[in-house]
Length: 315
Image 1 (spheres, rainbow, N blue to C red):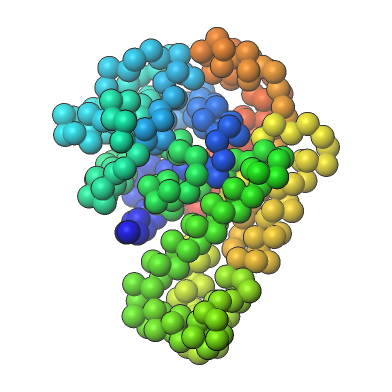
Image 2 (image 1 turned 90 degrees about the vertical axis):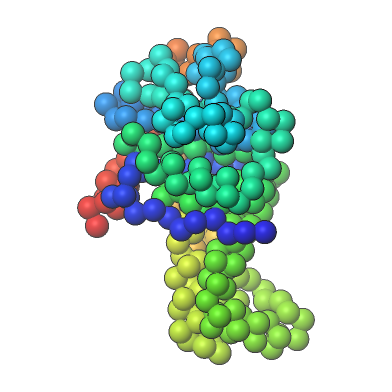
């Protein structure tokens, strides 16, 4: 097992956002593609990356049949840079890097391959790079999510989706703890705190950080600082009832109380038949139905993401 790289400062290259979801079928790919289109329509240079390794489908959503170049070409060193495998789309200013279609085992990247992709993502000629991650919480998915400057989780108002989102956040949190434990002082304090409980467990990750801090305040500060860099944004998709709109606020509160992290609610998207119709037509919803409820919501979410990125860059 290995840990992903640290987040890149916004000023060091394109702003990189990763969109994930603990469960498949929540509309993650559709939302990612349409956010990229919304940004491109504002005049920003965007690259959409299908990082669902082994299950690529963004090219279909964008109406592209059999892309000439894919991420597999870059991984196999047939293309020297990611810019070389980015193909133009029908949307001006938006390019697509399709997933590794030619590799059934594409989801099983080695550490060196992941590091290479991370490095080249930072050099893409773009203002924004959006990664559409695979479902679940495999290490590759988590590492892409944590390496991005912004991680976005998409859920739907169903018990299974909410449960899977919780498992995703928990797995990402543990990945952050592993990163903090690279510091021997943190690792020792954590081990001591776990032994002191008698069963090696704490009621919550927040209590774990407090336990470490009680034994070594500096180690606790380092662990807490690393954990707080996990601050995912949340979108609730396919909302049908008014009370479901508030689901994001409830999840944000629960994560703050249990994990001690800041989950920020970006907003909700109502269930909209225009999405189904556009997918069947192999056209992005924002292009096929620009004034649909889905399209209006996506434009607003894209605006909020862009605004947050600009505020972060301004300091």
